[in-house]
Amino acid sequence: MEQRIDIDRMEQAAALFGNLDENVKTIEKEYGVAVTYRGGDIKVSGEPENVSKAVRAVRALISMVNKGEALSDQNIRYCISLVNDGCENKIESLSRGCICITAKGKPVKPKTIGQEKYCAAIAKNTITLCVGPAGTGKTYLAVAMAVTAFRAQEVNRIVLTRPAVEAGEKLGFLPGDLQQKVDPYLRPLYDALFDMLGSDTYQKYVERGNIEVAPLAYMRGRTLDDSFIILDEAQNTTSEQMKMFLTRLGFNSKMVITGDITQTDLPEGRHSGLKQVLHILSGIDGIAEIKLGGMDIVRNRLVQEIIKAYERNGEASR
Image 1 (spheres, rainbow, N blue to C red):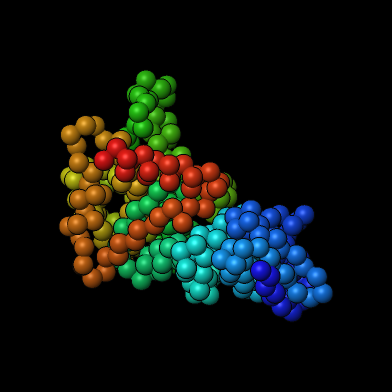
Image 2 (image 1 turned 90 degrees about the horizontal axis):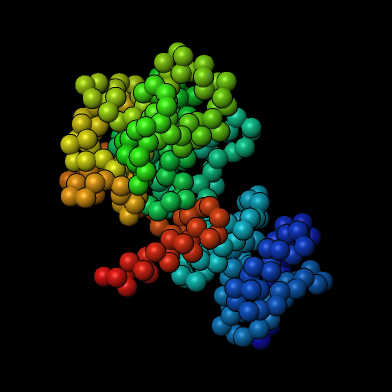
């Protein structure tokens, strides 16, 4: 079977096929079809069902190209996932609006439907709870939204925190003062801020008190007004710590709480505050709950495969 897709401009075909046809090769490998470009038409040939899926994937990718989106391995595989689920029409609803510009001039945009819902929830709500596996952009997008709010003078301060819980390693005997001991726990937050602001600008705001990166224990007894507050790795909070953190919320502030409830590092017998709070705060106006999944992973392709393999293993164990 063969199907044809009209192409308006040669530039569309060039963007679709990519360097050395690498984009199209991904589709050919996924569906076992042949994709060629000749005489202003794209031809897809192979088994009828596979051709149908490949054509839908190609049309979705052309839609992205028409929006000015550069195709990459990540968004090509995302398109394929949507096609396989029969949801490729959702590509049209992905606005691809820019959230923030990094220090190097790179635009930060949601790359999946789930990420776009996450950013919209942060903009609309006072408290946003986001759970999802590694690589879904939970922390990075939250920091991007915080920097955007700070630059727009919607808040006067960015506060980033996470519980200092070892992931199976003991760091207590590391040399240095208290700050140097807790820095390894906070490194992902530093990395995201350096990317958005640059190290010099970051340091300037830290000295002025506009940015604070600290362990969760430092939050006790405070009220945070005019602040954008992010609690990362919240699955490692206890119920008491989560309640303490939530009650730090002051006037004109936003909170974003992120975590992966499948990667809890708490001692045996301690319950995750994040898992509990998802039930306790459900349905309260001004509080949003967002769940990201494997399709929202935007790291190396193998990360998706690793997450799926662990999920399969967990189901088999149960």
